[in-house]
Amino acid sequence: MLEKTMRLNYLLDFYQSLLTPKQLSYMELYYLDDYSLGEIAEEYDISRQAVYDNIKRTEQMLEEYEEKLGLFKKFQNRKNIISQLKESMENNKFTVNTEIKHLFEELEKLD
Image (cartoon, rainbow, N blue to C red):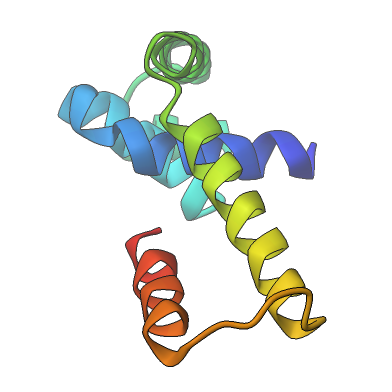
C-alpha cells in the first residue's frame, strides 16, 4: 500500500496540471493530506461513493498518462544513472574534475 501511495504521489506531481481542479483537490486531500473518503465527502457535501469513484478514475487517468508519457519512469532512470555514476566516482573507478562534479550536482537539482 505504501508503494502504491508513493507512486501515486509521484504521478500526481508529474501530471497534476492535466487534472481538473476537483480531481486535483480530491487526490491531494486523499494522498497528501491523508483525509479519509468520508472526510472528503463531508467537505464537498457529496457521497463517500462519489469521492471513491472520482479518486479511482483519477488514479486510472494518472496511470494512463504515465503509460503514454513516461515522465515518472524517465525520472527513476535518471536517478538510477546518477546514483551509479556517483558511486563510480566515489569508488575512484575514474577520475573526475570539478566541472564534471558540478554538472552532476546541477543534474540532480533538476529532479
